[in-house]
Image (tube, rainbow, N blue to C red):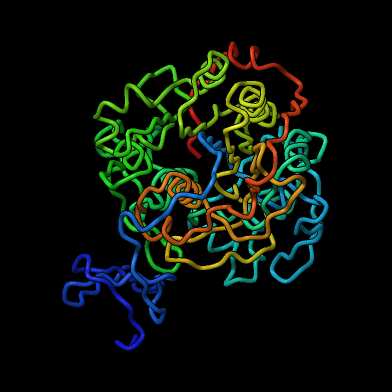
Length: 447
């Protein structure tokens, strides 16, 4: 990289570049930080905007943002055949065409969706490495969920916005994906911790692997960090936030990404803003309480995760949407619904490259709001850091880092000039009261 290709600003003295083969490279140029848009050797560097450089969205009516994160579904798997969206009925497996077949949400099998598996599936951009020798048939991943099992999701897409270029932020399973949802990074962690605990509560000796070269994992570190998060931006402005998470019968096992952030886990925020079980969200909204920013993650049986033998995920998400839609908060809320990783399922779209961590494969995203466009398909490239970007732009907050500074903020999905549309309840097979009273499945989803 030549000096003539670098643009910089005097902020700090070190910049990080990432080479796919050699890993992170630290570059010092006097008192400047050089932060590349693509983070790979040979790209042009551009500075991260500093505090105060991001303006609020002019005239935004959004006073509440709710982010719902489900589990382990690719776009081709969950929205196959949706009119106007980019999906395929025939995929490729090592150069051979394979017809995608229907598979129930209740199917008992799980698929490999580790960081090395992602590289195998990608197959140098050919998108044909999804076959697994331990599955019967090996092409088990070439499948889609029938529409009648996920009608609630299709109804939301028809009434609001569906994105068919949403890419999971990382190239591995849930833990790192959830960190990107709250912080736009995962400290290079690539996998889930090797215990049931997601963060600082983990027993001594628990580790989470970190990024290695060419699809490998390096020896792990203890999953407890102190990097800045969206919660810190909100706290600094005196704004309210909550993270609703599932919990085990062991109260120290809470499926919140904030458990991995030391100053949150051991600060006042943990007891006031990290709420469990996740069904408390429904009760809170019914009682007239909604934070300015809210994250909602599911119990295992509500998660859409392969292997749960459950089809309750769509009803759970619809219950969250119906609770807001029937409340006083509807006219001031934007709801984002996505899935944290591809779960091993086939997808045909080659993901773009931002940095060494990702993004990964496509996952669905839904935008639900009285200001969301109707029956609109967003073909704009999105990733989970963009939720943070939306929050930053909506309230004029500073950026956390490179990902949220450059992520798309979903602006194409909303029209603030339109009159807020009245809410039409999403048809469900169960009720919110039943979900509130339902016994927890025993552990939060961590896979």
